[in-house]
Image 1 (tube, rainbow, N blue to C red):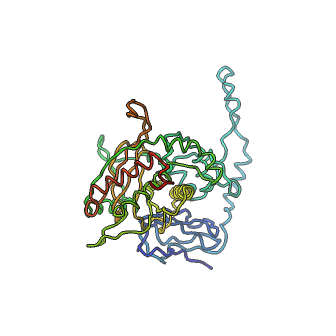
Image 2: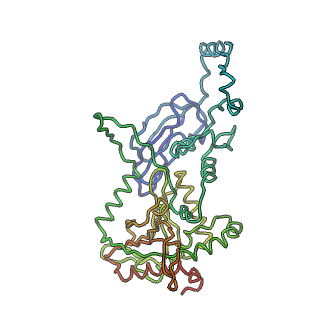
Length: 427
């Protein structure tokens, strides 16, 4: 008895996928529900599970092949993994019977107290395929990660918990919850002439899709950017005063992003054209506020959507952003979470950017760019004081948005953040 492993149903807007990584090879034992292969689409990576317990059979779609829904990927045969051959068993028994070599000793003078306490290195930990991929991409040592699965197996959730515990956030680094930092990827080994190496690497489907959409935005929209700066002293003081009570009450950390989302919604409600889109020769005004939050994942930038932000509380926003960050790291964001949106917010400040010009996420007509919070001298009541300042950038489609509306929208965001009580009083 055998069972075919097929490409699952793909979303309506996706026609095919690329076979990314096989976690099992022919002849290896598999367990029902265990991830066998990863398929990469334009936006997300799909894991295809084993349909039954058995032995991995023939792989019909190798890594790099483009497949469509319901295509056969592989076959799983009924049975269990073959036992080791008699010759291998004899060799293993012979090896175990041999006396262990005497440990090498060093002169007493060269041994340090710490070296005497050294323990032999633990055996290689058990890691699930999805966790192994994340460990590799984040350049982690699996020996440092405690596993909570069966027999101490390390799961995705264990890796994410380890990363969360390792983070050391400072007061001004809090916007990192907006766009997750990813360590630089290792430089690939190059080949070519001596002193002039080069390497050709194909784009991932996600990177190709990002490139396509960015070029589309540049070619089909009249992009213009307006800048301003905001004093975040009031937001920082409010957050410092209530963040512990907020977390105890709602079970989620109070970051900066919920303030920016609420301020953006307030501005969009005052200037509806910022929340609109070009549709042929018409302007489509949205009566809802679905805000895209740019998140960096190990595979690239993605923009999941917070729906109906005008109806969400601060805790709802923070909870949604936290879930997006986790799903982005795991590669489990759904197409529904990445589709749509009427306005976007991106935070280059988490990477140290002081000023930048964000690019639209089509078909949206505007995007807000946040940047690094930096103490700078400003004048207050005739006195020079240091204040936590951030430059803001609003890129907009000049085809439907005039400069006056864009500037006033950004000023509204600035004024709301500098006096958060405006969010309650709606002034």
